[in-house]
Image 1 (tube, rainbow, N blue to C red):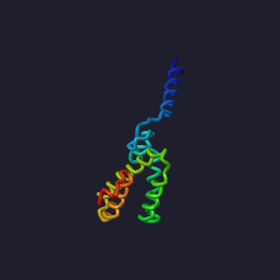
Image 2: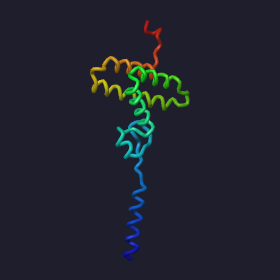
Image 3: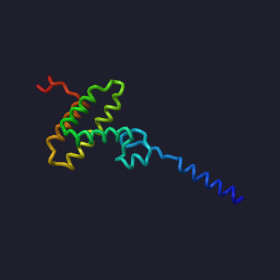
Image 4: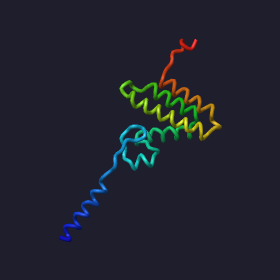
Length: 129
């Protein structure tokens, strides 16, 4: 009887190691809870996009980053529109936080936010005249 009880406890222990808690990440995608908790609430794909952008900015500067994501967003096929909107929302949230954290880059950050908002919600230049 003791052997069966031990075996059952051991089996439950092994099962608990296999169980991964899945949750909806901050970005709206499904992700492992432990991963999202460790990476600002983002899923693997969104966090990977952010990591790449931060590395690009550090290596090549702010202008290279602007050129990269602007070109990337404009060349996305229409069937990935949801991914583009998600990506833009992450960037807007990121730069709004940076506006508070890094006031010395206020002009650059405002330019980024303006461009992100204009891509997300395009406007007609004729209506501004």
